[in-house]
Image (cartoon, rainbow, N blue to C red; front, side, top):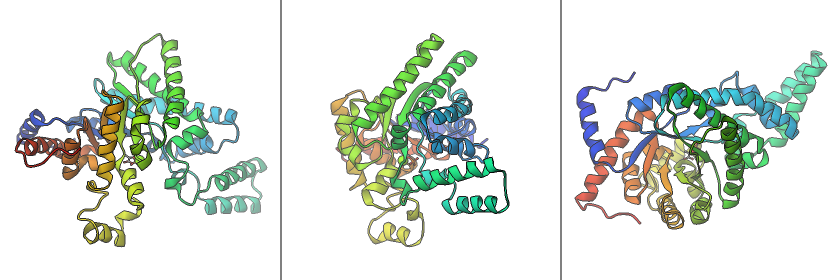
Length: 378
Ligand code: PEP
Ligand code: MG
């Protein structure tokens, strides 16, 4: 466990007395969630469910789910995944009982999950040449055909997030069922559960959220009815595309909460690939040549920040009680935390190890505001 000495804890306690922003953490498994809680996280602001499928033993299940050719096949595939998802969630919910947890439905750029096109072609060729079992060859050929069909030039701008869920509604339905079963199992076992939030990624129109809300809430209602239980479940969305920020008032109609995904919002507002911005020329270009700070590390107040502030205003005007947070990397960056405080968000969510710095920064932001050093951003 992380060693934080008592003095440090005491100073953090002072910061907690002063800050207004809540501080949550991004975690995808029970170990990280427990670490986050130990470091003072007041909830999980982002649980990325696609990370639950990176393990070699899990990948075939997600291949099957994404490459199924019929709804029936997909249903069979997701039914195999449901219990795995349920146990993943139970671990996290047990670590976080009594606190809010925001589970984000699947958001995989497909290239991270599908076999590589060239490798799969070679595999099929080799199997054919070596006279492998006909049924096995056939299975790999079908996978190859699906990989070709789903291949994208720009996967980060492709069939990600809600788009996948719109194409294959079996997936969000399965995830919603797994979440509720885990919530109820933890309640049964521990006598307490989490304040569950289900989050839809990469939405840019209220049409998507309305549809997904329908699928998720029907699955939630069905699970609760079968169990004869009542649990308050919040359904909301990421705001991580410029269009979503611009129509935030309309999206708010179907959202109990917004969580700003400033990683994708920065990528799409500046038109710069977030994966490539970590290397060579782009880093130099972004940090110092054209902008004072790397916008992926510290929020670009003049650009991305305006979209966030505008969406906060629109969201609250349309739905005064809407919960507002941020779960992009910026949630743990001191300058960005100051900005989110000034913008009036309810909480920030960051990597577990950045939770203490976010707690300090949130308190500093209050002190700065009291001293009149800054004006509140609108
Ligand atoms: C984001 O885009 O800011 C976000 C939190 O989602 P992800 O990093 O998983 O794309
Ligand atoms: Mg994102």
